[in-house]
Image (cartoon, rainbow, N blue to C red; front, side, top):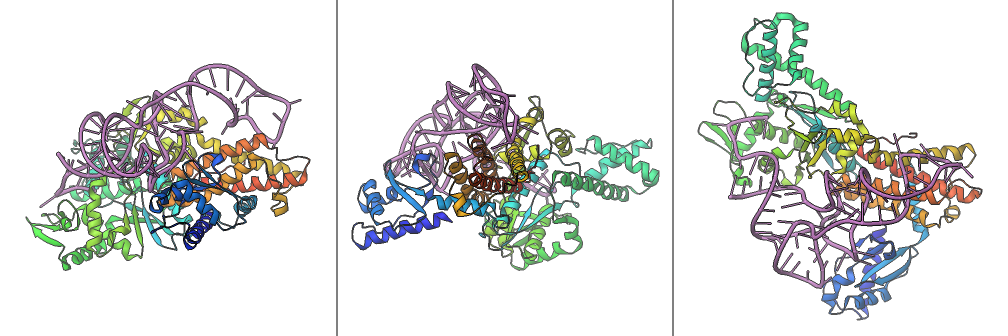
Length: 553
RNA sequence: GCGCCCGUAGCUCAGCUGGAUAGAGCGGGAGACUUCUAAUCUCUAGGUCGGGGGUUCGAAUCCCUCCGGGCGCGCCA
């Protein structure tokens, strides 16, 4: 990457200046380059002179002057200027920009991709919504973010497994089964109370009606426990297949659908428990089995096995964690909601107690969504039965606009989601701006091709790109090589959203100022090459976000 | 009370591993369609970066503190 080259140059300048005694520094400051916000400040700038001024006992501008005098020549750099309090502003050569175009236009080049992950295996678990009801917009946000994170990790050299944890063993499922049971029994004229705190959505009644239609009164005369078991199984099965369908429609594909129940059935729960017991991380108290998580940084100890003998949800979590590491992952990412943040310390404690470095477990929290309709806040709750379904959202605004909206905000930022506003804004959603740029390029390329004009990436041809609109566009293309790794490292897909919007804007300016197809064949070929590169980068960026890049709009 | 997240333009939000004049979209105002896609573009108005201290050559960004909002602190999940 170019910044590595620039860093080497400056490091060499430090060495040379030290060697001839013109700059005395005990410790050289870290050399970092950044893209200046203002064009006048060049392509890349460094503030090392400011940082090093104190140690050198000299004014920053003087330090900068000295460095400048000792800077080795480079064919990538056309000028270096000292500006402001002591910034060193570098201007890069056209050849460097042309190289960017060439690499970006190469479909096999993997422009922007890195191998930072060096093949590390990462498990990304997200959505993992309980199979007690249809999937809602909150899960939609999780799905969009999880997909984007997984894509970003893959693009930076990680091997990613996308996983959905299916909670089919807990007390919520029980409650769900009993809720269906009540409706079912009522449909046969049998008096039945909805369980306290039970599920109230219409879909519960629908599920009961479906089962009644298929099985008739088959379940009426079963023993209550057995009957609830049946409803849990049938209900969650049906709900899960709907969840899968909704996610599929949303464009989210999981590699692994993991059943909590399998942890119980395989004995994984017992194995994990034994491991903790064997290393003294567990104790019995008040008839229950506790994990001594407070030894590993948690506020207090946590129950694994209740005094009733039933394992807690957390016990499954521990077994699941062990299972994931057992499958060879180097890193586990759990995308959780803010309501689970209190359970993060115990998860990390469990990792440590099981002998895995806690740094290998990462739990980004996706903040909540405040759902409103026409300004009136709604409470999204499955149990209360008021929520906006993912399907409904897709129907109203479409997958691309929904994803883009979810990804524009940083995940740690709460999202105000007014269905009416998003629906109304759907046609003017920024996602279309970006897609439009892509479609426009496709159209230009098509037209050019029909006239026998093709892009040409030869150095001699690209040399024709000298207009400021062309230069800006090439610079913005180059920025993808920083935007992608940064977004991945910071777990910040919104950076890709920003980038892609900016790229579309810069392209629009180029489109306005530089007519692509003209009488000048060589210039046309050069501009077509720039179009091809831009189109590829837009498509790559949108692809990372799970958003389509249409050829036509 | 403790913990986590948030507080930046009228609204929704970027920017936060410290940098040079704090950005975008929407909304407001004024314009541009004989032109490779007007789902576009140009210009414009709009800010005590919640308040106050501190660190620094430099703070929206780091530290402390206060205020406001949200969430969490179960042998629930």
